[in-house]
Length: 427
Image 1 (spheres, rainbow, N blue to C red):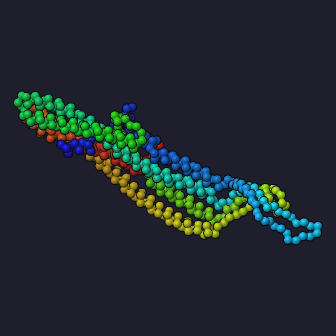
Image 2 (cartoon, rainbow, N blue to C red; image 1 turned 120 degrees about the horizontal axis):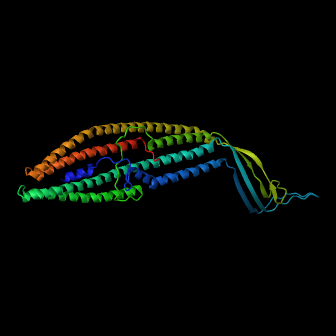
Image 3 (cartoon, rainbow, N blue to C red; image 1 turned 90 degrees about the vertical axis):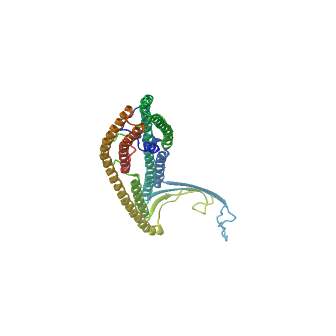
């Protein structure tokens, strides 16, 4: 009997639910919605998008003019003195205190594509991070699936246990009457009462397991779920294989990483080109550009400047080679993942087809087992069979029903696994 209790906990679930859930019920789609909006991983995704946007704005500032304000004041122990005197000519004198206030203004006019590549680099980095977070979120979705169906099994198990208890109590009245009339031995009544007590123990265990399941689901979802809310089995009755609506986040990570390496190559190539900028430098201070005038002066300088690094240009080609090797590794990883994904999808399709074929046979077996159990129940009422024999046949009927319901749940889980394996879209 203990073995039977374990089978009930693992296998029992009844029927498919309607397409629309009642107002007081909770559907799997609603759990997904709560997970998406309330889970910390989703909040991290939104934060990552904000970070990426800010980093792109910072990168775009490479084309903005740059203003640098500098100020200084100094006093020195000695100044230049002319070592000769001439009649009628006096040499200039210089102050020991110096002051300078200048504004440096520069505007990039040619950067070799550095700013554009840097901005794209921030975008690609954000895409890689977001794809990684979406992979974590998909794993949480799969965890929600497991918990959700576990609660469904327990809720239906409790319902079936209560129904079985009602049937057994009705049968107990019949057996008591037969024992009192001497048709059945008292041991039959004792066996039936023991079976009723076992079922009540099952109901207690199931009730507390359901409470624990809701608590776990609450923790994963991050939202409040009412423990008494019945869960609805997804309607997959008319499901047919279809094209994917999204790609797996693992593939998104690989695609984003490949784009990231491509952008890094563009940034490395930009290092081969010079940077050209215009500049202006107005200043006010002493001494000025004319050092022979020992007073505060306003001066300015304008010009054009170029910068080019031989080392950066030399290393750019090697960086490009390294990045191309990394891209090849990404291509190999994608090929490996797609092969594994295709194999998993093929296995799930065959699993779904096999289950659908077996369900029809299971229904026939259930009907046959039901007939045998009903016949044995009639024999017990007539005194031609013992309660133990009836319970044995009843358990065989329950096992057959469990197998049928197990196939049903396996089919739905396989379909959901198939959809997740294809790629899941939260929109």
